[in-house]
Image (tube, rainbow, N blue to C red; front, side, top):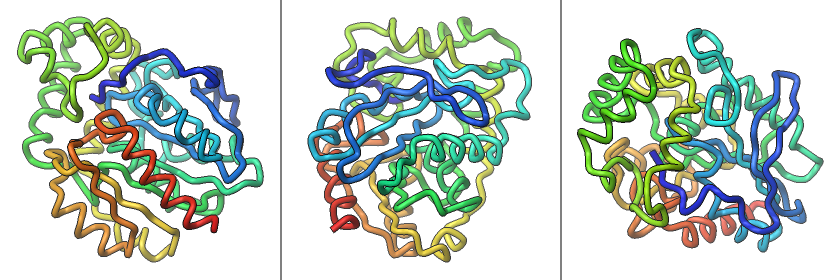
Length: 289
């Protein structure tokens, strides 16, 4: 899970409920769409707070940013026992409904981190028309690495027989706090209180269903490439979820813009937010001229 530097929105940002045709979703929003709007989709076990350090630099560059909790993630409600609402097509349809609400005539750029990248890809393949670009942040072409599949399987098995609090305690017992972040440097949080609160608010059905998706996702790069949508593949310089050479190859197949963020791992948005924001702004500015 990503470890945001804080769970408190920065000055000028506001947390609110986004009303859509598919229900309400918790969001953090900042900035004015002088150049465009950015819809930010978090990854597995993550939340809208994973992008909290990006809002200020994006706003200063003229971009409105809207980070969203997906259905069953943190502060967006979802069933706890029924996995069917978390099928990938359902989550992609949620994302398209969000895009229709936040779209305001200015270019709408879509960014998905990890699992959020694969949901974003599925949404674009359903309907690319709302989007001016797609950024896949630390999100690969197909299923996650074997080592991460094993970790996700352990988590899914635990969630099938244990409560969320029991699973959290088991995770903490197995791994030191500084290693519970599988995708970022341990900065800014003195304890795990915020992370624990976020974990307990997640729907276990959402985690089980999306965990299965991460382990079985097919390669849909050719489908995405055929759309011709401007695409950006951004990652840290190390990633044990999708190895860097695999992301390089995906970018080549997509003819995508490619950025590697130094001193970052699976969560460049929290590891190195300043460099990440700069790379994103450069890509979007190039598209808007």
